[in-house]
Length: 196
Ligand code: AMP
Image 1 (cartoon, rainbow, N blue to C red):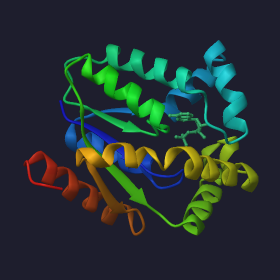
Image 2 (image 1 turned 135 degrees about the vertical axis):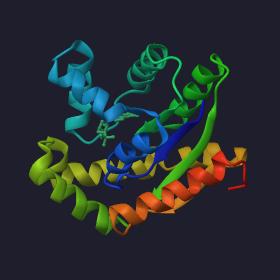
Image 3 (image 1 turned 180 degrees about the vertical axis):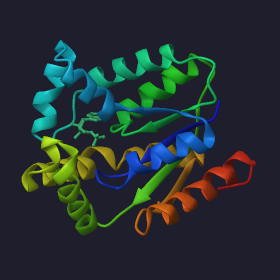
């Protein structure tokens, strides 16, 4: 399997680029944000628990998302690989993912970090809020809280993967096609066995 983590702050384009990457590389898209929103729309106990955190722009507890990912890994077998989007968001989640993959003799091949300035992130999120129907995209205070969570808890996840020579940074500003092309270059390099 070829498993990729697409990493970056809220609004960095992970979702948009994931949609294109899964088509090109035949991967299964696993977005914890999408999975949580699905639970919320069905008003499940998990969804109701998660909603309170999401509405404040805070991370949902590790145990909730780890269990969700564990179930998703079991559900999709015999596939080319997973594209993780919005997960892991803490070092605990990264360790848990490594353990879950190891149990299946699998690992992360590549960790791609999308780099976008804070001004651009806020602009994109507010703009997305006009059409996404996501309550956490509309309010500037919640957007700031999400970016703070990223700085305080999530950005360190890149350091967790760095010693394994799996981390590559890609400029997340420019046109969707330009960014997609940079991502493909990084992935193709790894797929062909070259050093990243
Ligand atoms: P996203 O769609 O990835 O921007 O996620 C929306 C919200 O869902 C986040 O602001 C968090 O509250 C929650 N969330 C998504 N993924 C995770 C995760 N891996 N760990 C904790 N909370 C998450």
